[in-house]
Image (cartoon, rainbow, N blue to C red):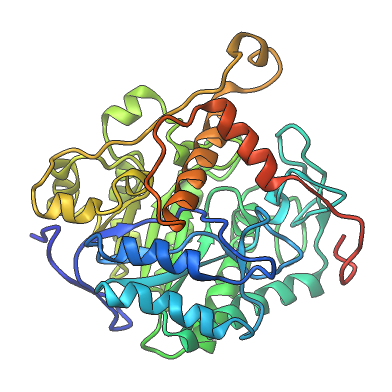
Length: 415
């Protein structure tokens, strides 16, 4: 049986030194041109020294006109190749493999960018305060976005990264194509489960066709979006079966969206007590995945829980995200037995009685905790330690300051 310390050889030949991955956390550390700079290198150098077998970057967008948040790093071409190379080197110097998570936000673009019209498979607005109804993509625009993923992957390989991860979870554009709630199309890109998964499969195929056989192509996939009538586990299992027929190196299982942020720790207490939120689902898709390794992210906290998941064969890689913000060497801590339990920091929205009348407090708490973790990543990137005393008010103000912007100009007709 595999142990946490065992290496894992992916189908492409990329070797992970052990089975613990630092899962994606959106860093929002791009400079004014949405390029990586010394801050991201500082952050990843610290994580690279933390004993992880795999580091997966946070949201790297493929279109600078459509960002999840203003600080997102964007790869549209090789203009930032030296900075990207330095980023990859920081991980390799610590002995870790590193994948770049490629993403497009679709309708889940920055909610605080006034004047921006997002795009999506269909004109279905996000159920969050201030969300703008997106414009439905044309066939030509869909093809352009697929090509953007491929170009970005090619640049990532040139920069020395070990692979890319296509973000098909958490409510972003690929997820929007997969869900019957957000994909109302009746053309080649929607209308039934097979056509709804076409966008993801075309992205995977285009990326794989553009990079070398030794470069890893992974997918992050929702087990479900936890919304009535939405993308359900049976839909997800069908996608896993389809991905198993492609040249995919790793399928990471997660779940939720900004509307139902299970990935941000808002799962029910009974789910958290089981430790790994999505492990039952991962167990159910082992056969469908075939020889493609499975990673599970969400809720792992104890060394026993992590090892049990590997021993049972429920997954091949354990992903941890939020614990790595306050314990940057979490993998070393677990592998060396310095602790048997990892901790996370949780904050809750204030004025709950008042706000609860107008908004879903679980959703607000999820967004707030995502913002709190982003604040801490910025401190780490500046060479500082996490600020565990930062509360809801300071976090909210920092989120508004970081995300608030106004768009007046239309670029390439996308707005």
